[in-house]
View (spheres, rainbow, N blue to C red):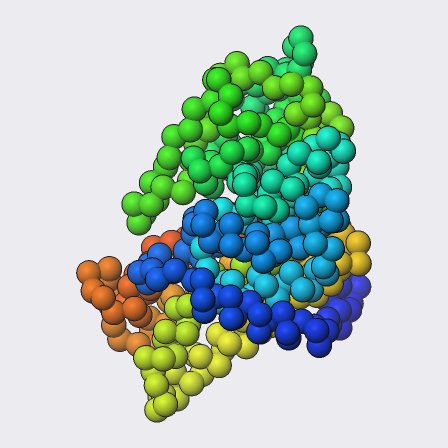
Length: 385
């Protein structure tokens, strides 16, 4: 892809040495991937399996790009990308370490204190602790500038009161990186926000799981009632939370999970169609595969930018928006080309997966920022609003 005045998606080619790593990952998955029902496999990076996370840590595949002094392995962002692709394509249950590896670790590398890095990063890389993200709140959603949960200065630290909503896997995590309001500026909504490392076992914290349409409870409401955080829980500078969060979201919005979450459904549909597809099926599959490969090129380009130390926030928002659209239209297109109704009351992999993704796909445009918020950010970055 070419570079233009608005977006930078320069073509990135995976170096030859990544092919050996890809073969290694596939061999690992063949030996270690647990047997699961089709709907469980569909959860991909939302699947939670502490034993599998431990095995990945032993392979050196968590914290791959981090410095060795923090438990990392000093490999390239492109090598990490290859491992992520293989895990997602195989629908491996990588949810335990996903947040810590994808964004919390890089956040601490960029903004954390040396003490924070020394404590948290080796534990994330070894699969000992899991982290979640405390951003969204009731009545605020993806509008992070409207965050109201307060962290008020007190003796020896901060007192936190408020609620976070839609916090994925909070009930299974040890720590949260929370975005709280440390002061209010009527002239600038983005000012006064700060990030904190929160031990979720502290007194005053309650976690309430929220069932989704499938009856699964990976979303949570987290309530803070006079929770005391020590001063060393602050990440970066007080009041710098807005810029830190936006830098963090470049990692969250641009990875291969933004177009591979529904990959298994596409594979099963192609298997069911077989070797004699109709003309309509050929066109539908061709369109979906073309969209997927274009998104891969864009996502891989961002991995290259992150590797080079660039700040691809705008491009990451584009990948998230387009990836969401692709993953939400995939179940609809697949259903239109194969006349089978989605149902969970069967042992057929295709219909189970179609049912699962039909029900879960509306949430794809919520996680990582709603479509409206993303497009507003893109428009502002282009000077259009």
